[in-house]
Image (cartoon, rainbow, N blue to C red; front, side, top):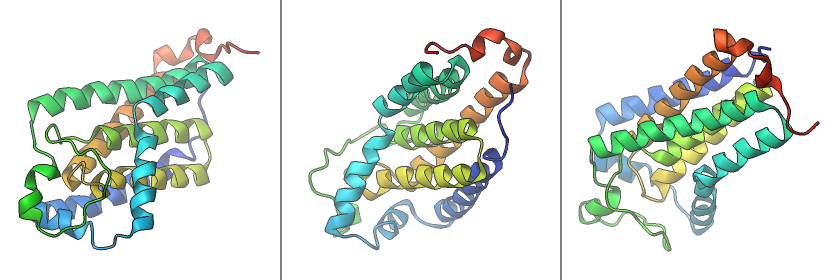
Length: 213
């Protein structure tokens, strides 16, 4: 069974615009200048919102979403979320240890009087790529596929962008980190989608089995 395709192009459109805008910014702007520019508007309320919202892309949330799919949907939906998030997370961990980049905290002196969110336990290393941004895009794209509706494609795409931006706002990552994470999450999920819905494997009847009937 192939789900409705209406949600896929809207999500990819949001990701494409996000990639184009941030890609141009990363190429044309010094890394530290861009990080400062990403903090032009801050407020105590926004600090609280961003500090809380960022946890939606923690590893436990995609795991919980996958288990919900297993319990209330079918094995195909479980694998759509689980393989997308799990596969992209493995890629991120390999890249983090291949390209060892320092996080914004290590440049605190150079960043000057830039706004820093209080109460955040800032990490020092393994900045590239962002695991949270990867999880945000893989989880939201997988859910968009399962939703199969154009509006949900746009809404989940915008949610993924917001979740990724929280990592820059709270200074756990630079812009290039969330740009790379979004690409990994989106492309991994797209590959999982084609495998589960358009390959020879997709025809396996047990994929549509429900654990709860």
